[in-house]
Image 1 (cartoon, rainbow, N blue to C red):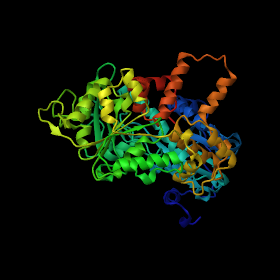
Image 2: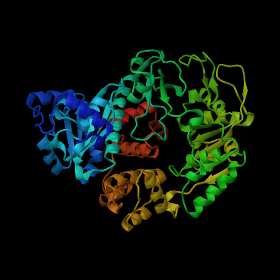
Image 3: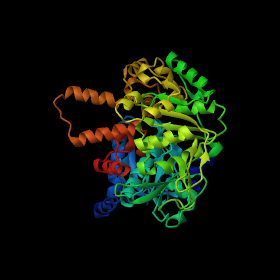
Image 4: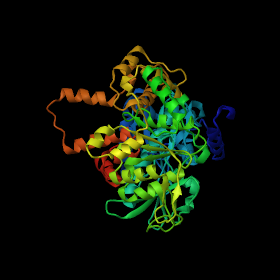
Length: 583
């Protein structure tokens, strides 16, 4: 095969295979671990295999329907777990795509597993790109898995026949690898108290969240692979020094011990990509009316209150209002009000001075209002804000002045306020959970966004989202459209987006039919109707509540914990205890 028909990664691999003296027509290495040797290897990787089993179970239907199999490979290239289509698995055994076989380049030539091990990055090897002729019937996609120290510990591989090639195979492998890596980080979190404070809402699923954990003494305890690429593999154990693009927050767990966590923002300052009104897609008269109302509100400086169920696009509207305002060149700062611990309210809103308290950043920290000066501050989930935080917020809204914790100097702040909630604030006021004076301060212009089930343009919106998923010619059969229109959409647009992503994969490049649309809520409702006498245990109720909160928060663990009214560490512990898959 000529190198100009090879991808860059495959071409480099072919060169290495030539240098190793391999011949494409030669029989492949047939040494497969069996007996005590494979049992020892499986015991050594028992925990990782258990995590992979949970992830593969989530993918099982899609893999089987596409005639593929999923594999977990250790850091040396040996397959240690497989799942998927039985018919293809039998064919795959003929080339030793099975537990115990080693697929490193020196044994199996150019293949997705071997190349991913060598390059330490995702790779797709299709048909004749495989070095050995015997493997030309395959298309394989692999993605590496790294531990909290940035070391490669294994590979996730999706393999199938070449005629079943699907452009989304690589994405699926990357998603599975990212999910496995998150599970490993959660296990590390249980031991080292690593806490994910701020997941990036728009980070693509195929890229893991860049994440560091810091000790109380500001030493770097661990980092995932994405963070290692930024701070360097030699940073573990060293003191963390503040860098542009990092956001640091001090947290307390239920034992009142102090740790710090750092999330790394992909974009900073004027590089931030915010939504505009062009991003608000729809033909429904209601959504067009709300869009026009928001556009007019953007021209004013009045506070705006966005109301609506979770997942209807409140932050999309908030960002669009900012980008259409005369403050568009200034910062847009978003704050999740439900995630602010009572004892950190002032430092989060107003910042703190150098040496303000034990465990604080030695150089001090800028609060959200100061960061939003001249721009817009978006107070998300305002209805879940603790009463103490409400009092502090009211004070700055009334006075337009902040005083950082530990400082005697006040600062005048000019920030446009946009708040959002899925709660009935009037009812919260009556119940004593929300201050009436703050309610009237925020309720300048209020815009209620419709739930997805109330919109008349669900199909139009679905086709638009399919295009965003790189589906070249989006198509929905009549049965699929009917199913979309008759579903209740408890998760609104966020849920629609997730269901369409799964449907794109299952459809395999063809028109999406009803069978490709999987509605968890519908399935559960049918189950409940057919088993009326079934009584949920406390464990069942907790698992259901956690899954719903995770889904509503788009798998942002901090937001989910806030919705559940429990501590973040408690949520992590329950996720591990119940074996809930983060995928």
